[in-house]
Image (cartoon, rainbow, N blue to C red):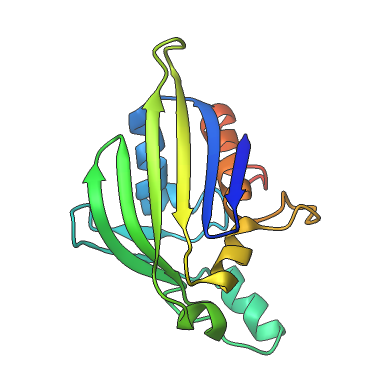
Length: 175
């Protein structure tokens, strides 16, 4: 996977996945799939321009918050669908509500682009572009940490886990 970061305001992540555009689209937009990789939080989309988006807290997240003296809100992320062209393009707004700092920042724009490679049938390039102008705390969170043993977190972790799940049937965490 490659990662590009421009002053953290625009982050671009790419991964090549041996799968069909339709399977990748479903894994990104279906809550039954989104619970199988990344942070395992179900994501709900109304897949039309102006449609709502939100991701719900898991019991594991709520328990973590409780053990550490804070409450995890539900939803944990919200936004709106801006553009939807299945199984190729999804553009949405995105705001993390898990802590007061990121919740106070403006909505950011998240774009998923799924492209099947003509030179390698059955392989798709998935590009996630997250535009984070005016949202420095969110930019830090979604960039992850290269020192984190769990894959660094953020979009790099989520896309790596998505790739593993679609190619092997198992996520990196073994869910």
